[in-house]
Length: 297
Image (tube, rainbow, N blue to C red):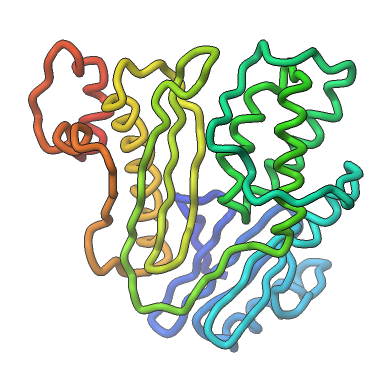
């Protein structure tokens, strides 16, 4: 059929030609097909259905728990049904909504509170929240925090999880908006919570990447090593963001999407910015030289 397997995404297949482009995204037995010419898309679907036992489900409006709603000038992606089911599953439908996922001064510890008699409920609740972060960047940091205590959750951690559920109760219909745009620019923002973990003083990386006005991906992830300064934590976050934006550059090249300019990464730490521009290392920064070279490349 003339498709090429994407090097950037193992589940993506692409057929490029001078007249049209067709993209096929496969997840087990669920398939999304789209392209630049509806006639070519329908021809491919006819071939697929004649070769395999499959059904055409029509225009995409639901995929793996994600709801897709079309408007004249934008798409809206959400997990409203999934969020409602999650609240029902853990008897939180009547809970009182709260305005934020976490209080700003929250610092969780593995020693706070009493051990839970049945940690499986905690793990199930957090697992459900993890899937909800696919369309909810606003809860990513909070969910990352409670994920760190899956092996030995305590009562204080469960209270934080329940607060996240209360926040979801009040924001159950929120999701992602994708606008039509001619802005083909990749922009990203990188940050770090230096030594934020009370237990091991590791930092947390935070990042988000936009294509034009549209948010593509976001991250809230605990760093694998202890940073000795805020500059080091910010620089490691910058290296992570650079790797993500580089992957998107590869993917867009395969998709035939032109980038109008070089990607931009915004960082709020001057020392990290100077380090990226200055090839001079000394004793306090030599150990992060690998990240340095990756960012510069």
